[in-house]
Image 1: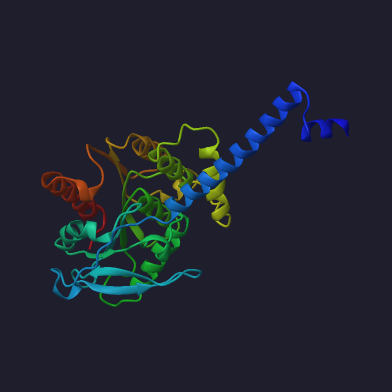
Image 2 (image 1 turned 180 degrees about the vertical axis):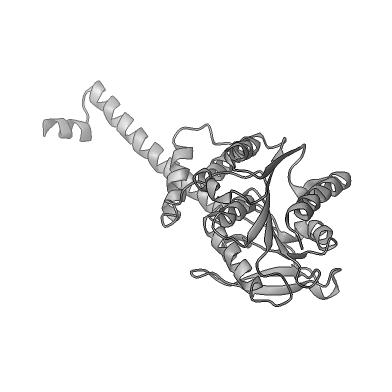
Length: 306
């Protein structure tokens, strides 16, 4: 009792030091929790910067399609028709990317006769659709394929997927559970959404600070408590035996290049590996884009027969 009184009303130098230490520790924990919560909020509500396009006058005659998930709002995609009864390739943008950034890639694949669908995972800010860095994006992608499989102008049993970082995680996750996925091309993928979270925290420049990264991961896990028990991609890779896979590593993103190489090494055959100097398709130079488009088109032409 006397000890508690001394701490509450310190009269000796050592009790004053203990009280100051406890107060400092308390406010440090509170500040770390607040900063981490604010950081995670900004991460899971990215602003993609998506811009609307006039589909009626856009080359390739695209149309808007709608699809939904069991526990989420309705989503929409852009469908570019190819040859009748041809397979469909779905393009999955990465974290914070807008689907309009992938329009040239969609056009390049459509020219090969494929049906192509552009999906959009996230909206703009709090009023848009938030992100789970891959967990619920898998369900959104499954909803898009289910909607496409109702159409009569395409091959309902043959789909290909392309995705980068978050889109790559969603694509590879879905391919492991859906036999309609016959080929997958992924760039800068990771095994668990927490890996992407740590990368994004580091981009804010606070990854080396004590407490903040751990607090941020705890906050993210709390937000996604329903999905947190999902096994990593590595644990599910054996299910992809027999499905052609292309793993693309971007040299300018060393963290995701390492995780992509790790997944490639653990993936069953058939598989291919490619390395590019610059990731982020939208930011590539024209020559780099053409080379990239040719590489993706070549992969699907070899592994996703019409």
